[in-house]
Length: 251
Ligand code: 13P
Image (tube, rainbow, N blue to C red; front, side, top):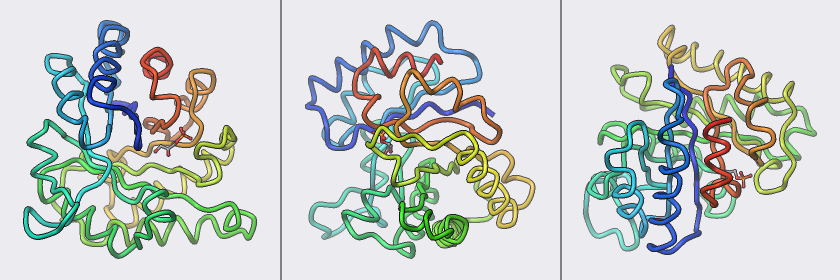
């Protein structure tokens, strides 16, 4: 299983900035990228084609959408479909990111619909899960992760190839705060996630990637990526500069 080194640029970058960041990333990292790694960048929709073009010809570099709607086309003002993302070169889509759950009000049922629809439309999907600080303090981490996993993956077609499904564990209190989860916390959450995935999908869950996200930096990536059941990272702030993201990708 190749480790997935993924960037979520959130609502940052213009077309020109995105294209040049992606081109420099390829210059810095493509030739040295270990065989067992893949790179993914999820820019704003408006920059998707710029990133896809910069990655064309770069082996194991792909682009993805940060969100998508649950149908192909129609009267849904402001929305974008998996087919439209794919038209801009995207191979991946994110679902369930904590900012969409907690800032934009998406619930588990809707996230589950998106995950299933994105997969059926041909995207590889990264379902993001993670507890709030209050939930951790109340000892509810496993309850929250299990609910988000079971509802988020509820309608996934049984025949989907396991490498097309990834889960990103992103504890909300570690996102954008500089406070990274400790190795024990990451390992516990990832082992629990694997257990739930196996209970849903059986043995093929061992071929699904579980990424860690939350204040990943060039200085902590090597330690995180070496932990059991950590099959990649999903990086926000430290992915915005090609120099720092290239160090993460190669860590
Ligand atoms: P930071 O790396 O900025 O903490 O963001 C993590 C994240 O939300 C990635 O999806």
